Image 1 (cartoon, one colour):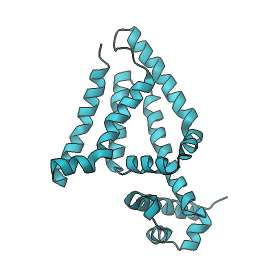
Image 2: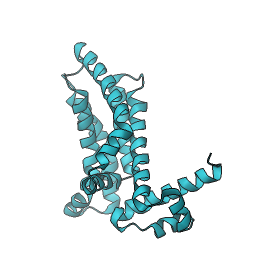
Image 3: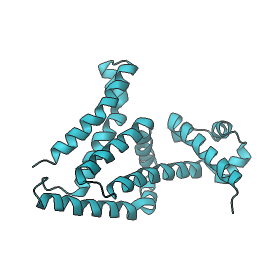
Image 4: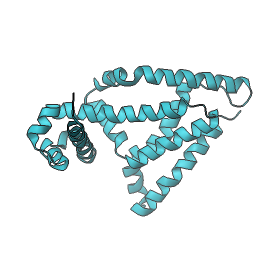
Length: 206
């Protein structure tokens, strides 16, 4: 059974690995840099994770679980439907704002190692299906009551993800073409949260 010290050391390595992977990507990340940032030697890093690939898998799975857990927390709650959708969008946007390189890292690594999709399915598939099934029941009920147009839960989830994720994937191109200074761009991004929420909620109207 791991001690508290073992748990904190492992978490320190994971946090350091996340920072290095996000800043450099998998290919350019070096375990020596991760170990140094975590305050451990490479032998200890090797003891916990064996390879850089295993370490990346652990970081990747941890982030995906965090995302899905926050989805379940909000969409599985007893909040009114429209408030639930609004809160989920805001939480997802805030997560991306705090982790702006996550979308690119996820896409690039799934492209590099397509088998990661299977890993994702094993990690979160059951939980995601339950969330979508519950959301679909609520959407159908709201439609029957004449509150919203008919829409599938899957389409709604895709719309929400598309609205929130696109800006963080495309921001280097967008900022370069608009020649927007960093401070002004950060303000623009922060204001997009409410724009995205408004757009999605209006799209549900009859």
